[in-house]
Length: 358
Image 1 (spheres, one colour):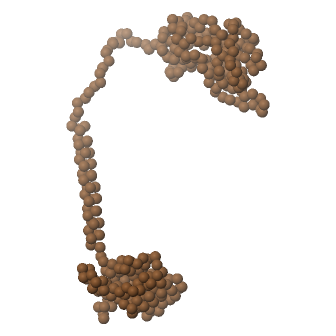
Image 2: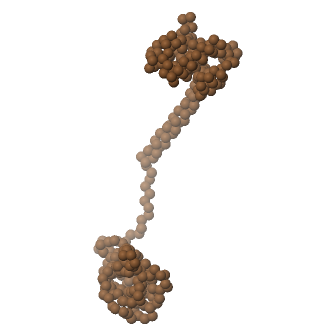
């Protein structure tokens, strides 16, 4: 039977500044002797836990050996045995770390009473030889907040270290094999080739579509109809008496006057879409609009304002005269523009129905 040879626990160890040290922040003192001091208290709570979880302990596995200290009053101090990491290797066991302490839980008490702490302290050790081991008991000195010293003795732990069994009848040692390199096949290359071709086709199609869209947009801009053509086409949609009913007159007069506003913006550069009727006709005064049409057109806009905002109901005669008047205004002002600028040309002019009938 082999055991961990911890020899004598040197109780002149440094008092560890764990979470149970008093809150006053005083420097820890040293214990000068090695004898058990105060009352010797047998304790439970020693543990031995594998850091690598397995169903058995193998050679070189690391073990966490320590104790649990429950409900420790805040301000209590402890002295743990001094540990020299790396020693005791000749016994088959090696200590890998010094003591370290974790605070597992803090229990609050009544007002004015100290907190209760659940602590865990331990070391890490390992074994490099098979066999059965009995660890030495853990002896910890406890110093209360009033200076009372007690020695806590925790029972030792046992464990067995094994190695991986080897079948010597069939076992044969082989050298480490290098990385296997398989030759590249056509089946592995084809998906990448086809994928690259498909991607190239998609990119070409996207570029072509973008170029065609830009070309079409530029052609549409070049072939954009003149303002008078657009206005006459829109006005042609308001012919007839389908919108003359009282509940539809607002749509009728809004459509006619909005069409004329758009034409005025394009023809005269007046911001008619944001202007009132008075502001529009103040801007049109002094232009090439014939005086007779100017007065009738202003009357049309004022009647449209009454219909839209004052619930005025126009007569059938007023409704019938609205579109022809708007058409005469567009054609007459467009003709004056052609006379001023022959390059404008009368191409694609929509012949108004009233002119055809006249």
